[in-house]
Amino acid sequence: MTTKEKVLLLLLAGINFTHILDFMVMMPLGNYLMPEFGITPRQFSAVVAAYNFAAFFAGILGAFVVDRFDRKRVLVFGYSGFLLGTLLCALAPSYGLLMAARVVAGLFGGLIGAQVLSIVADLFAYEKRGRAMSWLMTAFSMASVVGVPLSLYMARFFSWHAPFYFIVAMGLVVLLLVLRHVPAITSHMQASKPPISPMQTLSNVFSVPAQRAALLFSGAIMVGHFIIIPFINPYMEFNLGFSKTQTPLIYIVGGTVTIFSSIFWGRLADKHGKLRIFTITGLLSTIPVIFITQMPNWPLWLVLVPFAFWFGLANGRTISMQAMVSQVVKPEHRGSFLSFNSSVQQLFTGIATSLAGLIVTSGPNHKLLHYNWLGYISVAVILICLLLVRRLKVA
Image (tube, rainbow, N blue to C red):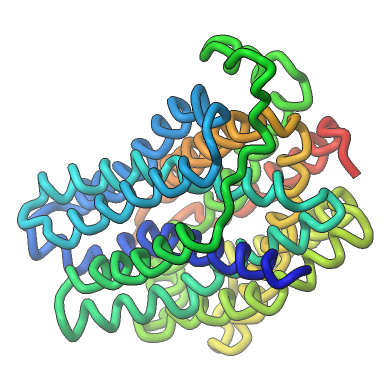
C-alpha cells in the first residue's frame, strides 16, 4: 500500500474507533447510569437500544440519497452530527435528555459505517480489499482492548460524563484530519445519467438476487455472532463463579487476538479467496461457541482459551464477509446498498439480543438457564450462512 492509502485507512479506522466506542461504552456504564437517574434495567436497555433503532432508520433513509453526493461530504456530515449527539450525551442532565441524545447520535451514526465501507470499496481493488478491511476491523479490536477499559477508568475517577467528552475530543481531531487529508470521492457519480428515484433505489436492492442474498447473509451473521454476547458476563459470574474484576479479561484477551489477527486474515483472504477463508473460519468458529455456552468449571486461564479462538476466528469471518458483500453491487449504487446493509445489521443485532433475552431465564442464585441453547442456535445460523454465501457468487 502507498503512504496515502495507509493515511486514509488510518483516518477511517479512527472514525470507526470513536464510532464503535461510543456504542460499546454505554453497556458497561449501566452501574453508573441506573443509580444516577433512578432508572430500571429495562429503561437502561431502552436507552442502549435507542441508538440501534435510530441508526437503522437513518441508514434506510440515507440509502435513498447518499450515492448522489461526494462520499467525503456525506461522511463529514454524518460524523459531525454523531459527535454533536455524543456531546449531548455528555451534557445530558436527565434520563429523557440522555435518551434524546442517543437518538441524535444514532441518526447520524447510521450514516457513518456504510460510508466508510463504500470509500474502501471505491478506492481499493477487490484483490486488496481484504487487507483494507482488516485495518477497519483493527479499530473494533482497539475499542475493546483500549477504549472501553480506559473509558471505565475515567468514569470511575471522574464521572460517567467523562467517556463521552473523551470520544468527542478524539473525534474532533480525527474530523480535522479527515477534512485535510481525505480527497473528494466522486467516482461513483455519473453526471451523464439522471439521479435515480428513491423507489428505484429500493427496487435495485431487492430485485437483484445477489443483493437480496447479501442482505440476508449479512443479517444472519449478526444473529449468529451477537446472540451469545449479551449473557457472557452474567454466565461467567453467576454460573461459573468468576468475579467482576476477572470477566473483563475475556474482552482484553479477545480484543488483543483480533488486533494481531486482522492483518493476517486480510492477507489470507486476498491471497486464497474471501469465500475460502470465510468457509474455514466460519466452520472453525462454531467449535469455541459450544465450549463458551456450556463451559465446565475450569480455571480462568483455561476459560480464556476458547474465547481467544472465538474472537480470532470470528474476526477472520467478518473481514472476508465484509469484502464479499461489498462486491455484489456496482460502484454507482454501492453507497445505497451498503447503507441498507448497515441498517440490516443494526436491525438483526437488535433481534439477536431480543431473542437471547426470550430464551435465557434466571434460576436459583441468579444462575442462567438455557444459555447452551443460544450456542446451538449460533452454530445453526453460522452453518446456514455457509450456504447463503454461495449465492453471492464471489471468489
